[in-house]
Image (tube, rainbow, N blue to C red; front, side):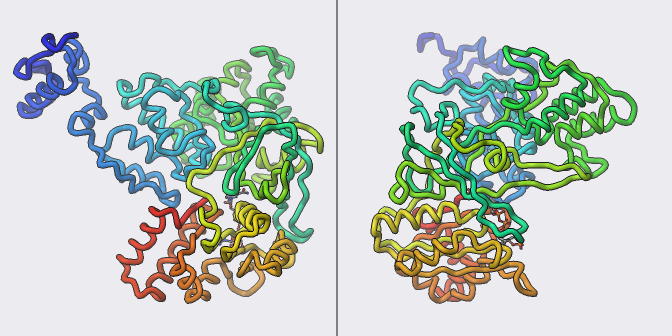
Length: 536
Ligand code: NAP
């Protein structure tokens, strides 16, 4: 179209029937004509039958985006995050629907994943692992409400092919093989936790990493669970689908954890009576019996069945099995050619049936030393040691949250870094849960770890957490901040990270003489300048 062919601003392109008042119509006509440079036919089509999508009208009214992201808080519930994104364009709402952890598990950051969905570059709406079903559900709803904004609004579960510029071993789409060496239990026999120190041999790979990076692992499902699922749909295990047997596909490719809404929908079509009603309600996210959380794929088939869905249709209703990410707990400077993780083996019971964490039990039980598995390094975004060696660091890492700090400390030990280091480590009981104790005590004796402060939550009459220890050490913490210390938190995003931040605000007030507003601004500034980093 040539410039001359553009509609003049006084030529109406919005039909009289479109649901706008005179002012809005005049403004929209001008906008379409002058700014979007659309020809009049195209512009009329957009608003045909008065169907201008809400997001498009947002964009027209100046996009509705001020660039702020007040919802970017992993501790905030999704309902609140969505409220804060009201009136903004769909890409911002999609961003607010993500879990806000910027964990990289989806291959993006929360914001860039949202943008990739809107641009159509990414079709999969189910990649936000920490956001789980509530995020997937919200993404689906938002994309359905804004079809014109998203060229590939249809959920596409096909894994993306690696982009041409992706380096093998550094993206979830381009994993490489690395050798599993061991997964040694590091919690005592009496511990309620089975935490493993996991070692990989990187020799033969080109993988390299720095402290702060994470490691993605591709794992498989427990065969006995797969057999139970196959029995529940009464299908032959060797049923062929796309070059694999049903059993192989279920072991390697599909998530058997939280059932997707599509599976409830499928059950709602093929069973009858109360079970049909229950399946339909669950598919809509209604939790009438208060037991929605207890459903996994097997329970869905068993409780809402018996049903014999076609195996292919059944697989189509499942989510793909995604890689899991763990913080790397080793330093290449200290243990070249090796990579370590610190992983809690997740096992629990619901209604008498054993439930497991697929990746953690794979590493603890289903892979044998010497076997290779698909892995990749996920480079950290904003979680790294300070650039200057002499900068002090304060690290708060209860439980397996200590993982990246073990990496930091070994790195500092191996590179003879002079900066002071302070670790706040907490766990349930000193006798059984003080993993890496010998190492940490040695690092302290060697002067690498200046202060080691512990909090045992279940050793005394009342709970003591890392943030209680921070309050007890408020004056010294403040001195470290005044000396330019960086502050790091790793662990549970929902409660611990929030509580630790609250403690730090209190310290800024009590030791730094700051008002509420000044203490809030102090934390905000620390974050903006990279002195306050989280891996949650
Ligand atoms: P955990 O059992 O969640 O807790 C460790 C300690 O923290 C316990 O003493 C616990 O006390 C205490 N705690 C509970 N609530 C707290 C709060 N609000 N503030 C401070 N302390 C609190 O430890 P975990 O199972 O090892 O989990 C650690 C977390 O780190 C997980 O959320 C995990 O996803 C995350 N993470 C792990 C990695 C990794 O690479 N493995 C990396 C990043 C993040 P009580 O239980 O006695 O109340």
